[in-house]
Image (cartoon, rainbow, N blue to C red; front, side, top):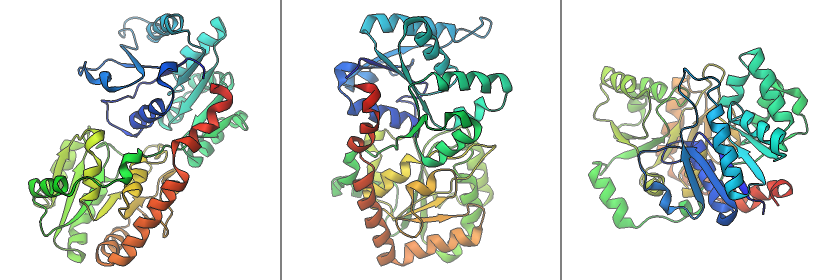
Length: 377
């Protein structure tokens, strides 16, 4: 296995699907061959749990120094020498990918570009950036996307990459297949005052495109169909205060439980104490969901799911077979889907079991990472 440097702007303890995706890829590979370069964190002891090496740095110079990415270039140059790096993985096409391009140009080190969707949208907005992104992509060994949907969006913007991209699906941690101790679930249920309630769960950053405000607006109509409901929200983000204001506007304070940030190692308990997982994802300002790792995690626990139509979500949730995919903005459709999966327990159970079986068969790291062997070995 080649000595590999993984460069990423998103890495735990930062919350999100990209962070988890990268953490799990690194965790599945031989630790002696892999180094992760990530932004600095206040939690200085966090990285001690990893078997692989994690280097932390400030990626960019202050705004008054240009080009700001030059700081990252010098850092990467030092790490290449320090660890004998033979391959670089970058998880953002610009500007991180340009640093990898410079490493290849100066020192002959090949690189892989992992694109997660938002970087494609950002790079496509300006002609200069799009041209630079194309140069970075074409000079890479391969561009890796996390869904067929994202791959199609990539090729729509950069048609010259036809035949130069590969889909590498994220995979849930195998620990999600094993239920936590019942005592732990009971304690959590008591803490959140869930006794006698039907529980729906949403886990995501509180940002545009995740559908939290849409579900809040739909909730009064949903409660008419499904009373005795509690909505657990796990996550933090820039839209939290506006979401709280909307919850107050619709008098939903007794229905919603804000859990906030939960470490990834503890998150599975929330799936297992809930009756239904729902995330009404939707396109926002040209950006769509790449795939949605949380849907795969939910599937691994066997919980029935409702997802909003967005990007690669329908690859994670097979509508009518492993969950239900709805129009986020259609209040009646959303309410009917929740009512169906809460009240028809046999149907919900069939969907949950089918989802768990599909994830176990198709979304595991041995199968996915084998796609990279030709460049990493």
